[in-house]
Length: 257
Image (cartoon, rainbow, N blue to C red; front, side, top):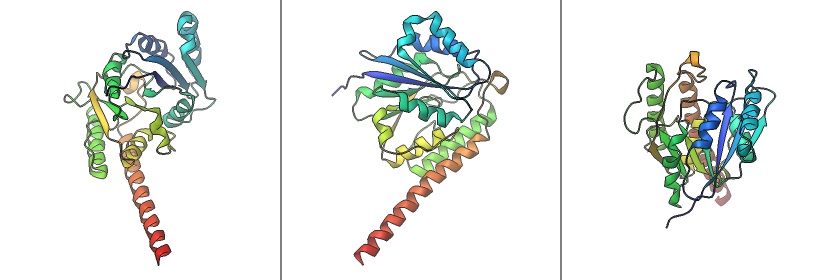
């Protein structure tokens, strides 16, 4: 049975992206979705100091036809990507949530491929994989190594085979957020969401995407060393679940005794 998609909430967390946010918004609104879907764009500024908020308002003033479809949340201080995303999730009203990084590494032209699997009502989460069709060009070797180690760690810890745990394109039904609680504040969003989704018994579907990596001088904020933090969080989520199950079993045995 094919299930139609209603509203898609595109969450864009941004921090000091004044030079790019106008272009990414332009591409987000130009991108096709799937038949019957409409878009809601939620931009969460995470305490930018470079005029990002002004650039967002400029885009809206130059494109008044898009204003009704855009929600803007502004933070006074920088809390981190995870905190920004959680703020965006609270504002989202769509049936499907699609995370769009506020730079040009990920292309909105991939939206149809990312959304198509949701025609199957059994699909709850889709990741856009940079590695589905081989290794991406121009990715720094340290970042490539960190991504491969992180993905392998996910397979070992959770027993589900995926090719790109740290992808920026994570798309899911809004109802998924009711199946577990997120506490992330920074870049640990990816491993926390992945680990808790897998522990909830959710299968993650993957589709290939385009990827245009940018470097530190171009504003890239995540580092290869953040991969170590991500591995820690994958292990933390799994160990907390195992410990919680052990405590619950111990309590049941005490009650029976």
